[in-house]
Amino acid sequence: MRTTAGAPRVTAIELDPGNPLTVWRIVRSDIRHDSVLLNSLRSNYELGHRPRGLELSFAVLQMGLSAFISRGAAARMADKWSKLGDYIAEIRLEHGFGFNFSATGPHGHLTIWGDPVKLHDAIQAIDPV
Image (cartoon, rainbow, N blue to C red; front, side, top):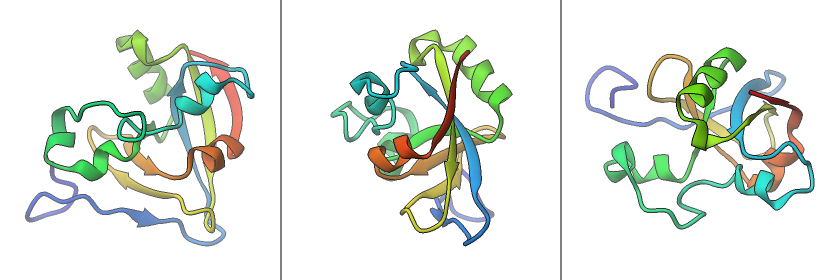
């Protein structure tokens, strides 16, 4: 995977103070106090899933979550891979909460890292795909 010129690398970026980032994540529940929703905010690594694809070369990707810079991109992915979930969560990432991100995969795709509970608290809305 190339995220920069030169050797393949993944760069985790810290959010700038006063410059939040809104991302959209495909989730499996729209019920705020449902453990299924919280698990949708846990990485494959945290859930004990085997690495796949680029995760075999970049373990750090398995420790992050796929997200998108637009709702439309998230909806297209959810339509293509229905097993990912039936809902899209709008998440506002802010500086100071330990969130990081990296532009990975196709245009508009991000990998985000953060505590699942803090990510849950950062959800602004959950809508059906």
